[in-house]
Image 1 (cartoon, one colour):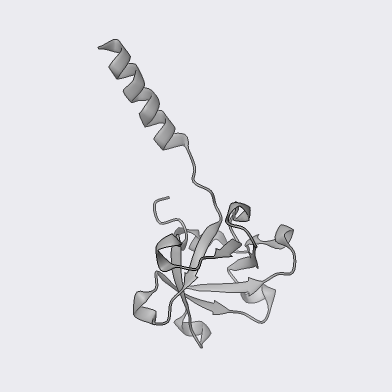
Image 2: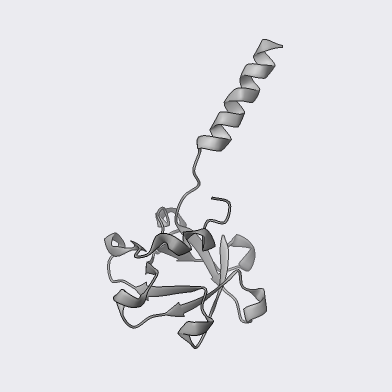
Length: 117
């Protein structure tokens, strides 16, 4: 009985402490109604919430702002729809040239990419 309780406690602690990878596997949907979030691509870094760099391999998407395009909707962590106007967006992004530049400028919208946290 003690062994079962011990293993249950370990499992519980692991699920509470363990953090998922922070990067995102992203799929671009064709219609707004299919999206988890609406995104607007800013022209200026100072106006964005998140600085984004697209990586070539899924394993490289290991921190916020590192996005990997998936080929299929079922592979994605998040489905996005690009809107035409900033006022329509849930999240404003800015494309950066280097992986090291990716990350939050303003973390107040972090919950959009990590709803369970």
